[in-house]
Image (cartoon, rainbow, N blue to C red; front, top):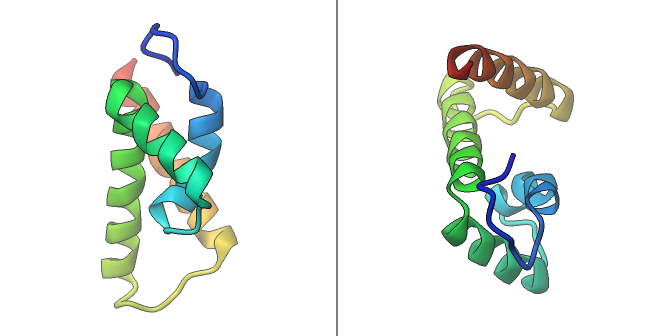
Length: 88
């Protein structure tokens, strides 16, 4: 995923940090890098927004109960597969 523009932090790195960013579990250096990148790169920002939506949807569906990392990973994989199908 890339918007085609050069960035100080590559898209692949930002996408690998998205979960930590969404959960507020990212260190200050990466926080600034990811925030800057998301403001410059619409595709990565779209991916981030999808992660925020997924997290909110899962939280609502679970009545606020925490889910396992494995369950979350399966849900995210399914949503990404469905999203990719509709984008193509």
